[in-house]
Length: 201
Ligand code: GAR
Image (cartoon, rainbow, N blue to C red; front, side, top):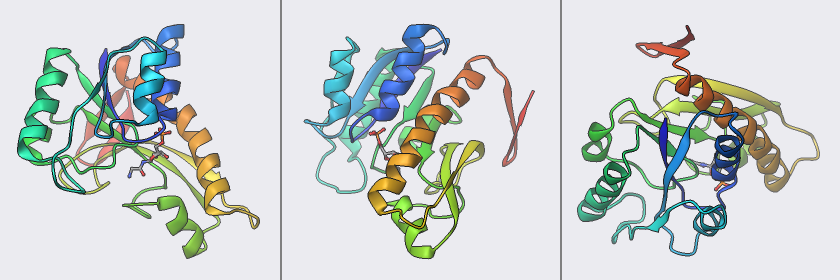
């Protein structure tokens, strides 16, 4: 299974996935890593692991890619022959022109138990709301924001002593377990999806 990983941040999910590919635990290869942030940790960490790493300028908008940027993302992903697109902290909305090229083959990790707390800084939303449990979710990307069919979730308890930083860091530990595990199931063709509901085959 050939993966194209997109991220805007530190790249801890990308590293966890790439390490499991390298060890053989995840039967996949990271074909390309792309970022919309030129100096993002995800690019330097990918280069450190000898993975192809590309910066593609996003254009003038803050929350989405402009049309020519989007075409360039699609071109690079197709050139790398990727089968699955793995969003790993990619902080822009993927619009339908891009999505339709890879429909059903784009996955995302979100730092909450969806459908609770979609959008930005989900760990802070959880803390402010006062929930006792939150976690992370891997889902297929559809036209909405954090709305597609859920493939896997891991629960993380919220502690009385948590700050946004400590809670996010424990959620990220869970992400590093969950994301490679779900990708492994996809690679082994062990997940079926009917409507919104996924099941193990
Ligand atoms: C992760 O916690 C991921 O869940 C979150 O960004 C972080 C990226 O960390 N994504 C979102 O909030 C998407 N809405 P990383 O760059 O170290 O993998």
